[in-house]
Image (cartoon, rainbow, N blue to C red; front, side):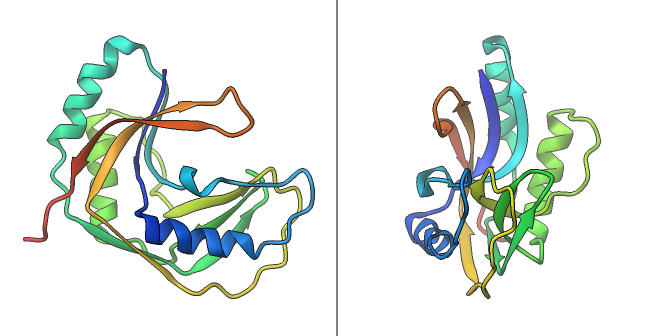
Length: 169
């Protein structure tokens, strides 16, 4: 099964990001990501045998990170990946802490620090005209382990489990 740890937006955040995406003027074969698929990936695991699932669930349950607030305040076209994203120009320290803890506990090979982003469109062959983006503030109090099924036109994501983030000390 194909798995990843991620943050999932609440309905208000999802709607605000969908509003940003709706203003895009994309040429074929570009396609908007469905708002229900918006997420911020913390750790992509790829194909994982089901025998590893109990260990991954234990790693998720042992995380002790604080709730966080991310402000998405820019849009970016990533030519190499052919995606258009809403991005946060500033990384909240709580997000970096959770990212570091997960990557260490998962024993993932060294990776560059993350760029907080939500993919709004895929298969974007040419940069769309970008308009100024009104900031979208996303407060999150949990993270989860998700399963990705990529057989259809759009990936389908299923919640495997979720865990709370802690109130600030």
